[in-house]
Image 1: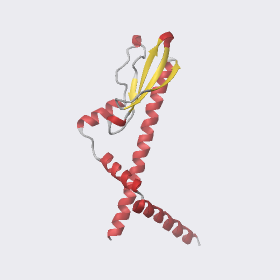
Image 2 (image 1 turned 45 degrees about the vertical axis):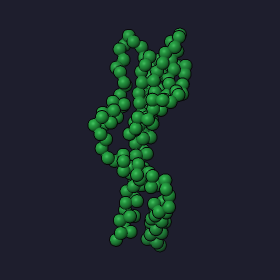
Image 3 (image 1 turned 135 degrees about the horizontal axis):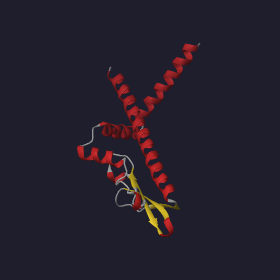
Length: 154
């Protein structure tokens, strides 16, 4: 009996994968995006991606944190998130979040200087984690589609 349950579960799993790869346009789009992401980036783009993981400028101790920023990961500048700390009167700090270069900012604050730095660092870290999870998911779907495609050719 145990082998029948295992076999039935395997058939159901295969059936789900087959349904996703045959009829869902989203899966085809994700597989295409995954194949693009799997290609090595051009040298200028690769340098931008590495630079975006660090603060854009080191902060001198006496300058405060006004202008501290980090950018999220991603292959295209136009959809990359960026978080920038801005200081206003009375040592109140705000974080402006933008997507690409031409978007309106979403502002969070007021907060302390430490809270603003922590907020920027946390947002950048979370964005990196989500990006990696999405990339891994797309790679897994592309691999499953490739396996099913190869089985169909046999």
